[in-house]
Image (cartoon, rainbow, N blue to C red):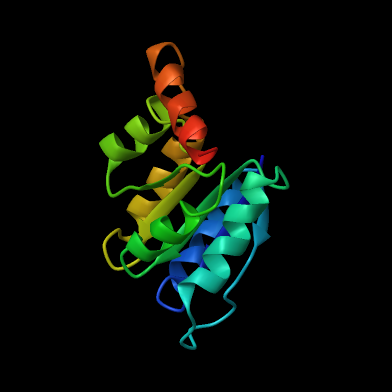
Length: 146
């Protein structure tokens, strides 16, 4: 699977750890920045990764900033993106099972590195349940058209 990944300066270290983790699991990783801990604006990087998912250059995305909130907001501005801010196993599983989230957002100061790796692995391996949830996800897509 090809995964888009991006962070701001606060999420840089966690992004780098996740890149290594994902590569070790056999995934291709497209890094949309940032490339160090110098202060930057998260929208500049989050939107690039989200667009790569939306245009099918990448199959899914993982975005990291201080809390994950900013990245989730910017990612959800991109048509076709269903970004989920997750902090634990339950939110990760439900974001995939019920919402078919295609971008995972994590807070580098909220989720410790080892837990973030666990959550990323769980997120990538949890399938969408479809059924009644597909109707709801389709409604989200319909709202984007208005």
